[in-house]
Image (cartoon, one colour):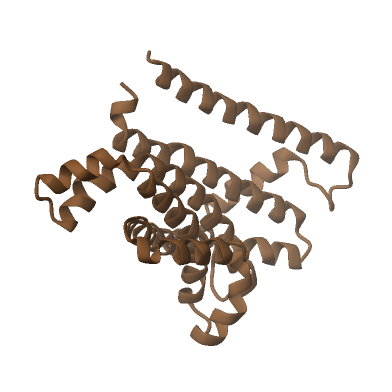
Amino acid sequence: MSTNQTTGVASKRAYVVAIAVILFFWQVAAWFLPDFLMPDVPAAFVRLWEEFNSPTFWEGLGNSMTRLGAGYGSAIVLGILIGLVGGTLNAVRSPLKAAIIILQSIPSIAWVPLFLILMGFGNLPIIVVVAIGAFFPTALSVMNATESVEKVHISAARVMGASKFQMLKRVYFPAVTPELITGAQLAFGNAWRALISAEMIVGFSAGLGKSLAYSGEIADMTGVMTNILVIAILAAVIDQVILERIKHRLLRYQYL
């Protein structure tokens, strides 16, 4: 087993240990607090099993995953394009980077009232908020990586008569891929939090965020903790299973 494979196994074990520790402290808190304030872990898992057998749960999960896919996917594509443009064109590099740094300091959820007014209730404002959360770290990581591309590689490509498109495809994009993957994983965390927050506020149709908000409104603490558990587990699975596999596939030369 290579060093990187060993690191990957250790990372997954760390997640398992972290989950076990969180569940332990949750159970300890449940022993000292009334049931209506803090349900115990078995009660939450019983509710979770009931939710798995409910069509409403799967409808909400499907809606949330669709919004996440649309917003996150759009942000990655736009982040790569804008990052490459900003990193390769000196005329727009500094003002574009400054704009990204300023705008990314605004919490994604702060845009919800504006987009509700502009777009009305529906999937679109949530998707846009998710995209905003993921766009800035993606674009900034690509831009920073583009700026650090070896000058000798750029000069060699120009001497060989490479077009601008070929420069982007053969020189810049391969060079920025490692930073892009890191930025994409960071962007996922932002996108996931933006999704849940936006669904909690907008709440016009089924979704993980709406389900969490509704449980809180009716003081169903078992429902609240079950929804939090689902949100946490899904985030870990997407990050450590899906995104990590994509990372290993794109950067397989680093994991030999």
